[in-house]
Image (cartoon, rainbow, N blue to C red):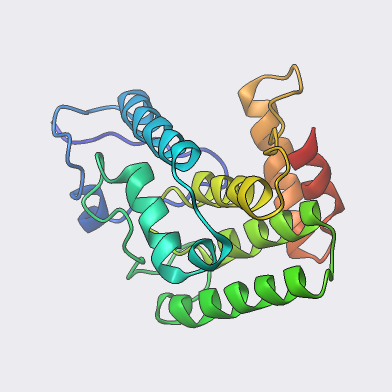
Length: 198
């Protein structure tokens, strides 16, 4: 029996080759997959807490890939590797490295010249990296953790709540999040910024 995946609204389905990259062969349902990924992500978060990471390391392609690998490397063979297939969202895969480099350069500029406040820099970074959609899967979770790392390690501020402070059901929170992302796609960052902070 193969892996049965059910995708929520806004999630990018894996192709067959990517789905075959599952390292834990006993997983057969999405709920089990979520549990294994959650445990792996907790280890990555723990690593970020106990590792002294500087801005010049954080804002590099190597760190972006390394963080994704730490978040998903116990579960997926392709963790930390840029996708090589097209998605329902995201840029054309051959442009991932170029667009990520632009984002990293822009972010350094925003920080140096105080173009936006720390919260907005972190949310703009999060939004653009999820738009690029660097990896086969896990882009939303990866982008939120990257935003938190910018807040904590570069700006010495608290991480975002990403809607978790609201007493709402996960599906409702996800719906608000997807709506805020769509607004940001249209140039209105305010709903995503509010979602991140509340």
